[in-house]
Image (cartoon, rainbow, N blue to C red):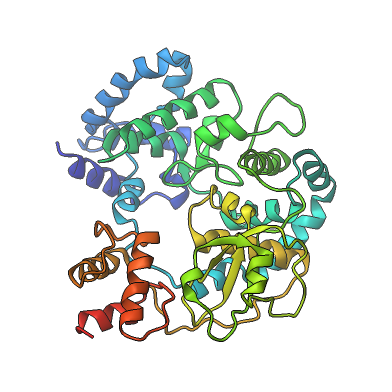
Length: 420
């Protein structure tokens, strides 16, 4: 039986169950799922390939120290997760414009809820801030971004999701195997029970969505009860997030970045460069509210998330620490902005140009191919817009009299496609 047919069977068999059942079924449902009904074979019994894989994986888990009883309990009634396969293969071709992303991520509702959480957990957050040197607002902002303050931590049983990926993912097999083993070791140590080990389709779990390997390295037992419970113990989860940021280089007492205004005639070749705040100031870069920069000696990188027609930012070290949590500019900007808003700050001063639509990955590949053909060497056409691609874009923009901001937009692709 092919993998695709296996997952289609699994999806069809479970389609009538409540959505919450997609992770790990309660005992009664499991009993029903693994019995024969009117001569029809259940998904768990039919999926012999996956069952053989589970048995074959046991020596790997055993050698890592996982007990046999834990292993049996962890895989009881588990079938491949069709949602994981669907989402793994999807890796959305659609790219949400950053202004839409921020409108949702830093909504008034989320800001207000964040302020409530800041108050509700004030003693714990104060202790966490003191222990790790990470601003409480940043910790709360990541909590809000990852699970909307614990209101949705994912509906996938983590062992099932990771086993599905270890079994069927076309790439990164070693990574998924290691994450699965670590998840099993977490269960074996009693930090969480299988029915509470919920997370995303890719295995990120708990209030602040740690992969098992991140849990292993950075989770914290805030209350000293011997368990690092990021699923049901909110202070443990918040302390774990603070520890993660600290261990990745968070600079205490400093912000993530500043919204800035660029002067007329600004040299856009400086975009993506790192300079001291004082050096940027000498180039005419200023804050839109007229306030001074508090630490002129700080190093900062100038970025334009939507090109020259949108807001500009000087990003400090802590911005790149946030990106270690999720390596996306939009995500890190949202976390930083949400932290500021929870603290009492206002919205960005500059508006986004909603005509400056970003490219999908396949469109970015097309742009890279066209730039290479025109002699603006950007390297391999892989759909990833990095420094080399931005340099090529700037060179092309200069050649046709555009502002050389290096932004890969739909309008830019249309222009170069038309041969202009």
